[in-house]
Image (cartoon, rainbow, N blue to C red; front, side, top):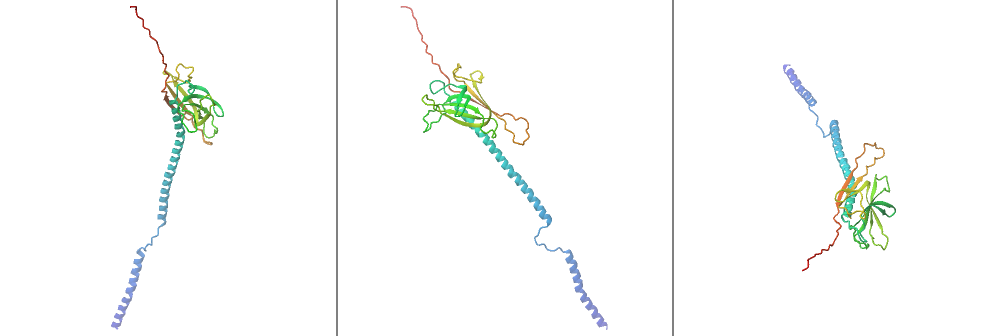
Length: 269
């Protein structure tokens, strides 16, 4: 009997060991984290979206800033090109001015009546050697050039007036002079030419009435008209008038050749 009771106790102990192991493994599985399979949590996804949005906003600002800078530079260059062309043309014409006299060299007149293609204007007229030889043009390099201001054809494009260069190549008396008009720039508010006589700057000049045939230098001043306000934009303070000045020295001068006779008298031998 004692033997049977001891065997039963051993059996019960043997049976209880797996149960203890099962309870221990259950407690271990409850505290051990489950393995992950590469998925992102909601916080990580939201953080990635916020970072991507910030980077995209920065790139967008830089890109559109570069586009606006490029457009502004192109507009500035487009506005500066006509001004540079007009100044270069004026400098070439004034530098090549010829001495009045003869058939192909008329006077310098700051208030001449200019007969253009379709209308008549009052402007400054000179004779200059800025003409270009062409195969189909039999005229010499001396030409008559006049600068006038005219109202623009389309006033909605810009304010001010157009600077027009009127050129006549046929200076001979046989046939009628043919005018060639060239619009140099627009948006001009005022064109002033001053003439230096060696002492002071004068606002007018006429070679037939002046003792000096040509001035020592000619100053060109172009005052640009203020830019018009866009429709619907509130008008601010008055804009400053942009003025462009250029002085061109006149390198030709009239020379008077005078001959005098000298007589010698002597006593009789």
